[in-house]
Image 1 (cartoon, helix red, strand yellow):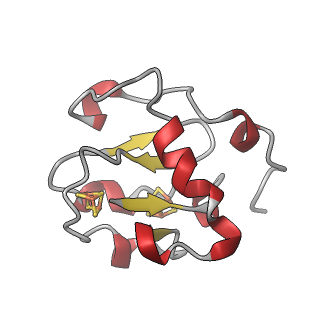
Image 2: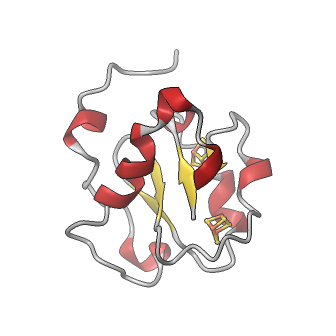
Length: 105
Ligand code: F3S
Ligand code: F3S
C-alpha cells in the first residue's frame, strides 16, 4: 500500500484523488488517508501530490513512520467501504492527528 504522511495535514490538496483508479483515498478532517487494503499499489497518486506527502509503505521517511499506522487506524471503525467518494468526509482522524498543531499559513 501507499501511505499519506504529514505534509498533507491541513493542506488536503486532493490532486491525488483524481488519479486513483480505485477511489481508495479517503478524506478526514485534517488530512487524507489511503485505504491499506483497497489500494492496488498503482502508484499514480504519488507524483501528483504537490508537497510529496505520499510514499510507498517501505519508503515512508522515519520521522513520519507513525503515519503508516494512521492510514490503517483511520479505517478501524469505517472498515472497507469500497469507495471514498460515496463515503464522503469522515471525522475519523486518529486522536494524535487531531491534536497536531495547525499547519500552513
Ligand atoms: Fe494530501 Fe497531497 Fe493528496 S496534500 S490530499 S496527499 S495531493
Ligand atoms: Fe490509488 Fe495511489 Fe493506491 S492512486 S491505488 S492510492 S497507489
